[in-house]
Amino acid sequence: MSKVWIILLGVIGFLIVGVLLLGLSAVGTYNGLVGRQQGVNAAWAQVLNQYQRRSDLVPNLVKTVEGSASFEKSTLETVVNARASVGRVTIDASKAPDDAATLQKFQVAQGQFSSALQRLLVVSENYPDLKASAGFRDLQAQLEGTENRIAVERGRFNEAVMTYNTSIRTFPAVLLAGAFHFIEKPYFQSDAGTEKSPAVKFDFGGSTTPAK
Image 1 (cartoon, helix red, strand yellow):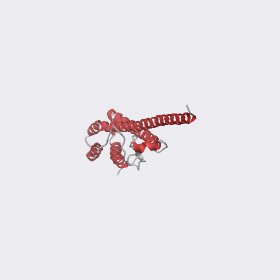
Image 2 (cartoon, one colour):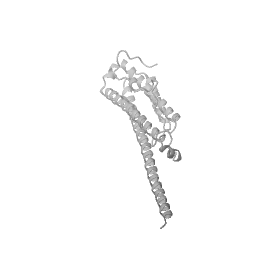
Image 3 (cartoon, helix red, strand yellow):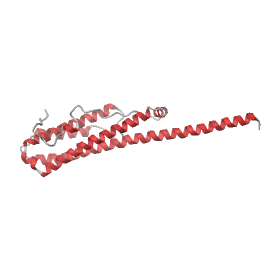
């Protein structure tokens, strides 16, 4: 075999190996993107689970509060209406939102719900018999725990989004991201006050001022 053929076969062999390595690298990169995307979706599902848990507590909360005959009817109506508004926000539970507007709409509705709950719990300060109820105290504790879980899961969601968004903008993954429609995911934004979990106070301290 002539030297030319040996060189040619060597070049062909080198190209084949290069293509195989490139293909394996592309597969690994793609699988990594899928994994990070699924991580975002899993974190999103956990956020929704905690919001749903809070929503599920409200019927029992309202029923308990209604036992106090003189309790402000308007406060209860605000909570019930805010809960209903959350349910009217169309959101895909199977995957995280792709656009900031959808997430913002969801966040605003949840914020209004948080504000309504805060109002109800603060107003309850004026009803000693209600505060002394074991059922009401139990619901307070469950809501407090749920608010904390919501804050934690939202933080984990933002971390997962940051990892994913960074990966799709990093070379060489950025080459595949566009081709396979991996797009950036929006973050939960910092709360302006209405949805901020620590603002929902359950100790009814003397310095607490009812929401306007």
